[in-house]
Image (cartoon, rainbow, N blue to C red; front, side, top):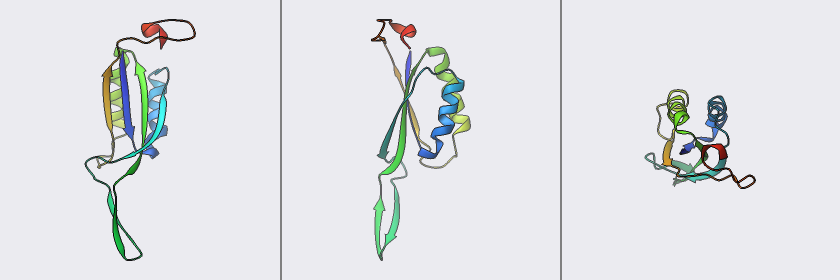
Length: 112
C-alpha cells in the first residue's frame, strides 16, 4: 500500500478529486495549508510599501491506495493538473505497512 500526500493549488482541487474518484481511491483527507517552495512567494505593494507574501494558500490531499493504482494516479496528476509554472505542487509517496479498520478489525488492503 502507498500513501500519497498531494500538495496543490486550491483551484485544482476539483480536478484532483475527479482523478482520485475515477481511479477508485477509497477515501481522501483534505487540509487547507499555507507554505512556499521554490517560488518563495511574491512581492506586493500596499500604500507605497513593498512587502513579500511568502506563505501561499495550498491544499494537501492525502489518500492510501493499493500499489497497483498508485502509479496511474500519479501519472494522471502529472498529465492533467500540471501548468508548468512554479507552485503546481508536489506529490510525496510513502510506504504503508498496514492499515486497520477500527469498526470491523479488517487489516491490510481490505481495510481500505
